Amino acid sequence: MTVIPAGYSPALGLYDTQKAIGLIKNIFQVKLCAALHLKRVTAPLFVDPATGLNDDLNGVERPVGFDIPAVGGHGQVVHSLAKWKRLALHDYDFFVGNGLVADMNAIRRDEELDNLHSIYVDQWDWEKVIDRESRTLAYLADTVQRIVSAICGTLDELQWQFPDLSTQLCREVAFVTAQELEDRWPQLTPKERENRFTQEHKTVFIQQIGGRLKSGKPHDGRAPDYDDWQLNGDLLFWHEPLECAMEISSMGIRVDPESLDRQLAEAGCGQRRQLPFHQMLLNGQLPLTIGGGIGQSRLCMLLLGKAHVGEVQASLWDQDTRDKCRAAGIVLL
Image (cartoon, rainbow, N blue to C red):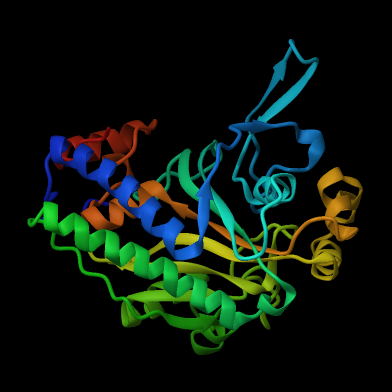
């Protein structure tokens, strides 16, 4: 459901917004590549479902599929490139300490629409080869801090060009586990816990998402076959116009053969062991990696102080959303 903040007025008009979006995407990608030693590569819009490469997200979202008469098969529009990136690092012969980043565009037709969610998803999908000694929470935290520094540096350059922007971000990251949030606020929903903690600390990384907590429920859903649930998390910033936590990135150190086997069993997805990607991973043929996705429209929305994701991306919206935004003078692209 769309919410219009009281007294909201965008700092930039439509023309300057378009200019600023272009600047953000160019500046941040350069800073991200420098911070994490990444090289930009070309990525697929769709994959063969038989390969097991598509991201299953929470396991209930329906991928957009279509038949391809010319190849005698079917294609699926990607939900993300979580698995494809790791295979690409293997195929392209990337070495430890270096990685790739790609523009990912997806259609998530089952998404519930609101100020932050659209059926169109665009993000920087990145993945980096690591050694076994780097599979630690300390290495994950250092990577998170590098990403936050790239985001804040992008804001600095953006505000130099657009002095009317008043967005403020905290460069210091508060780290907390999903279990610590549940222990502190057992009566609240996971989203309510995120909002409480992020309002306190402004820039937050919630660790260890996917496995069941003491309550018997996970903090949030995670596919069992890319992130190691003990070495992952979500990066959130406090978004002042909407007065809520905004997730900018989901990321983590990826599963090794042992954690993949354990998580497939816990999730009841043992049948995936027979898929080509999973066979390679279980047999130790894929590199150890860390990776994630960073929302492009979400980052633009955050840095530009926008109240609706439709102000920074072109998508389709229900009539109620269009009516509310039109009445409030909010231009949907």
